[in-house]
Image 1 (cartoon, rainbow, N blue to C red):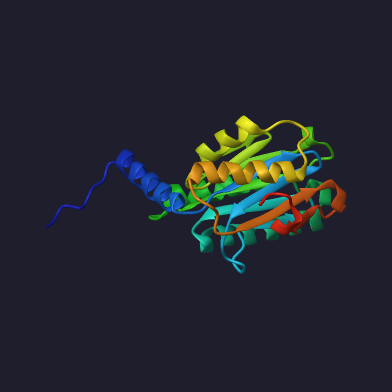
Image 2: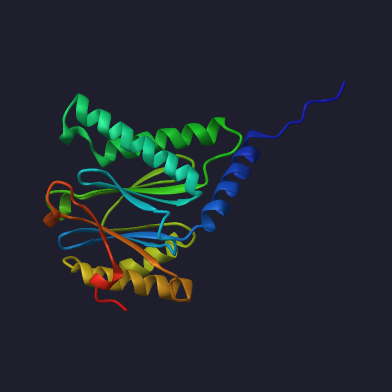
Length: 222
């Protein structure tokens, strides 16, 4: 009778975490930058069909890096939850905090109980009535959730990108200035030119549905 194969729980967790981090590191990064009228979401994305940034509900946006099919599954689940919550209760009851908590619970459950973890990192961004009321949450592959302010980055070089942007960020920046800051941070961190940008904003001037996609030509950066 053969002995069953045994892996120590600590080693199993380390192996899962390393596997997920390697998958995420292969993904192109996304940054979120606060500007005077809202939040900019800037992703390096050469594809014109596969989107990494999208609207979830009224003033809430979703951004994901890693395996496309996995963060797309999470995005669709988040939209369904937001729609049901808004229908059963009130539109004001749909919040980035609630959605990020649900994503955190889902990813934590998958990481703990499934053989293969999701290779994803996501951002949930909510536009407030003022910039002080903006909400920005980062959720990692293992369900870890961080509440951030002003600037966030996810993906292969997320930490370096966030540091580069924070060094140049200031309160009250215009959208064009925020875009230029993000482009320059990508250029210096990646040490190359981008293959294409996916740009979206949550902007108070857009009304109740604050989400809008932006073409690079609308902004002043090269």
